[in-house]
Image 1 (cartoon, rainbow, N blue to C red):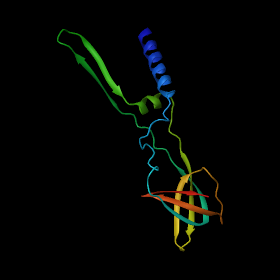
Image 2: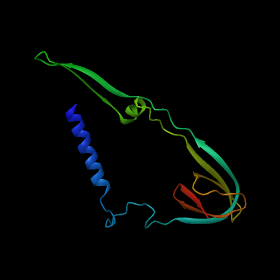
Image 3: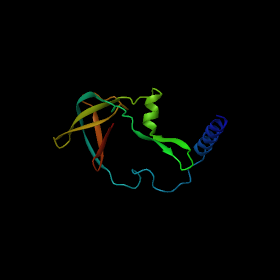
Length: 140
């Protein structure tokens, strides 16, 4: 029991130390929006609808086994994933509340973008759609 407490303390300290490091000198391209071409289109909001994406249920999985050594020693071993442990302790995935925004682009075509609630949009708002590949977001 004492070694488990020590292990938890060491892991907590490592986590604290690594979270306090300053990463401002990192010049690698971690944010995929940097140095990429994004298509910007304008339009007006036709409709806004609340959409709830249901969280998938946590399905426990892992494996458990028993071994018997040649010297007559028996052992119990197993592996369980983190989501299974979370479900055992009552941690559940949450539903995501999103908004579906239908926009009439300047060329007359309609497009729908589903994104998290960050800004509330209403009918008639002039907006911009920023598109990169298959991803898009709506901004004012």
